[in-house]
Image (tube, rainbow, N blue to C red; front, side):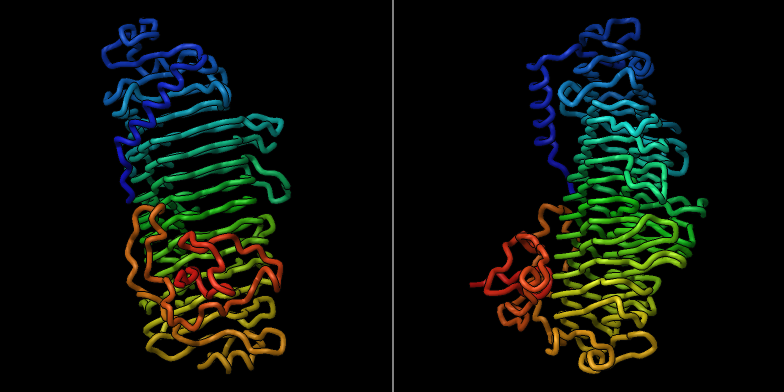
Length: 549
């Protein structure tokens, strides 16, 4: 888990308070255990005492609620539409100085905001009685207005939210008209030891809708850990780090998700560290997702996932490792909106797919669901050691796909793990990938046949051809130290991960397909290590461009 520098965090709080103090605003309201609810609240000497008083008051744009630093206040804290601020004059709820105040929710909710926006909540601990005893939510922004309206500006920053039987943080819409929130920022959130998930964004599902409830979400520098799920809930998955849905435009970056999901009991689907479904234009990047689990009889437990109904989205520059399920999953379920035009690029997966026969890169459509379509997976590096999970593979295509393409990837396995396992199909295309079964026999399973060499698979299926020329390799990529990477713990430091850098003697340097030239694919400006690409005359295989002379 990344540890935040409290001094820097405190400085940012102090600067924010100072900036607000010098700007035009309405009123500061102070809350202290030594105050009285009959006081005016407008000075430290006239502080209110309880959050019940705060909840009963109607605030104006620009007001601030300042909870005494280090103090503990019994929850819940409730906000209503009459408390709405604006993006330029938000209602701010925070602590008086560096040490955060605590909202102790007991067995109930921490902070509930109903049809209200223009709100910033900063520098607080929000505490439930424990995942097994609490029956509420940590921080919950909810809208149920008609008319398809968007409530603008919510900021949740420097929050520690834990011990809730529901979600740590929720942004939800119960509106059939797709009313929701717009411009939501969640920064420096530590959501841990909650039951259902660390964080969730959701709306009212409609398979026929062409719009989404929420828009423009930014989740950055957050940690989601030890959100284990609920063993008594069998009708849905529980125990994810973070999931987002019913949203048009979301970025999740520089976040870490770990040790989630082990109590999930749903047998038709399970938790994932970081994932999205029923969403458009989602970017998950520069994140680390690791050691996520699923229950004994449940599924998934993976690192990253673009799931049912996701379009125009991307997973890039991420490190996934040691997860029960896939490192990177593309999935579509029956009844979802269409899925397609998604990209998986410049990621590293190490020893994912520990259970249930998944691929480190895994593609799946459920019974009755439309096939995955128009997706590209390129410049990824996968290392997969053998596990006790039968069928585990570097890549698994569990069902048929439509125009899904794999380019310039490196797949390394050990101990006899399969390089590729796929149903026989015409809709997947592999060009210029490297398949290396380190210390073991080459094995690609395609349909009912298993091929012991790249050339045999190529001849039988037509894969790994570029026009009339053969493509793809089955050589040692000469990586620096494959299989040895450990938890980085700070996603801002992912570039220091050297295990999957190419050595100068690698045969894969300057030998990848030129995807912009050949297919008009915009591959981005940099690789996994945030180094410019290409470094040489052409791109290299895999996630990390060689940076030698």
